[in-house]
Amino acid sequence: MQNLIAGIQKTIGLSPEIQIKLFTSIIIILILWFLRTLAIKLVRFRTEDVRISYNWRKILSYITIILGILSVTRVWFVGFQSITTFLGLLTAGIAIALKDLIANVAGWIFIIWGKPFSAGDRIQIGNHAGDVIDIRVFQFTILEIGNWVEADQSTGRIIHIPNSMILNQTLANYSKGFQYIWNEIPILITFESNWEKAKDLLQKIANKHGEHLSQAAEKRVKEASKKFMIFYSKLTPIVYTSVEESGVLLTIRYLCEPSRRRDSKQAIWEDVLKEFAKNKDIDFAYPTHRIEHLSQAAEKKVKEPN
Image (cartoon, rainbow, N blue to C red; front, top):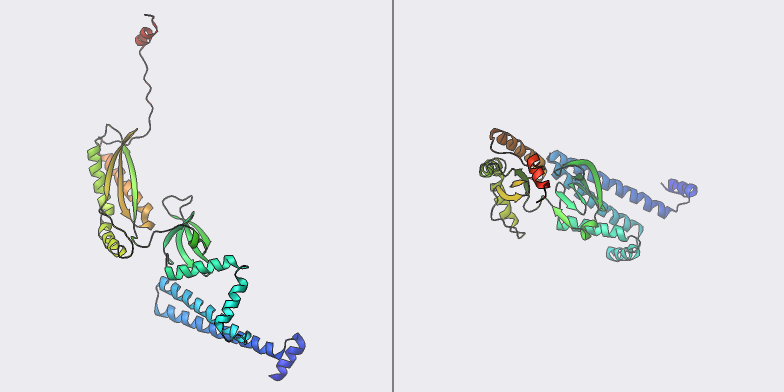
C-alpha cells in the first residue's frame, strides 16, 4: 500500500495525505450510492405505485446528497470540527456569486415543506400550465397543457421551471383543495325557438354528465374548508339564461375533473346536437344580416316630389 501511495506521489505529484482523502471520499460516495440503489430497489419491490416510488426515489436522493456533502466535507476540512461554522463560512462566501442558485434552493425548500404542489398536480405558474412530473433542487418540470391546444389538453412539451419562480409568481393549483373546476358551455338559440323547452333539455343533459360529481365534490369541499375558506351553496349543474344580439343564450355550468374538461365538453355537445335535431322548434342562432328591398312602387313614391 505504501509503495502504491509512493508511486502515485511520484507520478502525479499528490501527497500521501491528499491521496488518502481522495480515496476516502471515493469510498464514501460509492457506499452511499450503493445504499441508495439498494433502498430504491427495495421500495420498487414493495410497491408498484408510481407516485410512491417517485417520492421515495427523490427523498433518498436528497438524503444521499446531504450525507455525501457532509461526510466528504469532514474528510477534507478536518480543521472545521463544527459543521455549523463551516456552513456559515461557506454560505457567506457564495451568497453573492450564486444568488440565483440559492433562490432556487430556497424555492425547493418551500415546495418540499410548504407543499403548494406535489408531483402529479396540475398547476399554472405565470404563463406556464401543466402537470408536474418532476421536482428537483434547482427546478421542477411540467408536462405542458393548453397553449395552442384547446381545453387544457397536453401539448407534449416538457417545460423546466426554476424553483425561484414559486417565490415571486402567482401559482394556481387545479388539484389541491377543491380538486374540481367549473366549466361553462354557452349555447345560443334563435329568438323564435322554444327557449324554455331548450333549457329543460340542456338541464337534463347537464345532470346526466355532471350531477354524479356533486356528492363527491361536497365531500371535497368539507375537507378543503378545514384548511381553506372554501364554500359553495350549489354544486349541482345549472343552466343560466341571458339575451344576446343574435338570440337567447343558454349557458351550462357544471363541475368536471381538470383532466377531463375536453372529454366532458365533447360528450355534452354531442347530446345537445342529437336532442336539438329531434326538436324542430329549437334552432341554433348565428350572426345574420337581413337586407330588405323596397318594391318598385314604393321606390317610385319615395322619389316623387311632394
